Image 1 (tube, rainbow, N blue to C red):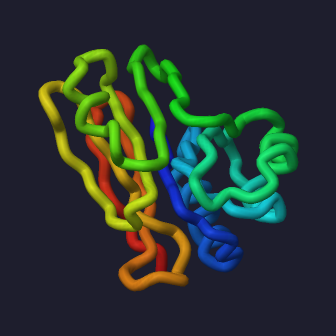
Image 2: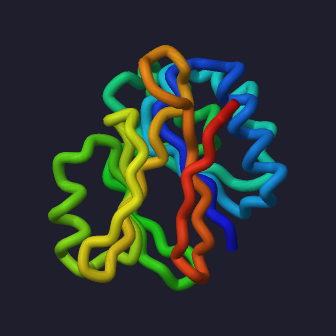
Amino acid sequence: MLLGILSDTHDDMSAIKKAVDIFNVHGVSHVIHAGDLTSPFTFDVLNELNCRLSGVFGNNDGDRLLLREKSEGNLSPQPLLMTLTGKKLVVVHEPDLVSALADSGHFDLVIFGHTHISDIRTVKDTLIVNPGKVARLHKGESTLAVLDMESMEARIIRIP
């Protein structure tokens, strides 16, 4: 199973569309959003995903009630605890607890966003993934991540 991971889309509709296209071309089975969608209208594009989307709210998300409605209940306050393909994962937005969550040994995968800097590393037996940022409104490249849940190998993909 391929898992798509993105964060910090910040209403950049053009970049979100490119991210959706990348995920659809790669045939991901599920997409995780690590927060900062910002506005409910982003689902005008996110609903073009050929798979389910789950995620957490970030610190810049506005109308959380409408965001939750537009996501069909698939966005929630952090942390989001899930099991996919037998692997336990936790999704947060801010990085404050990432090291402690990974160090706990309770999770196979910790996903976070907020920093706008992509990061793939392992702490003990836990993979940590920050896909970077989709939005082009800040310095740095726009990126997302794709993770093979069987091999637990992740890679960062630059959004053109």
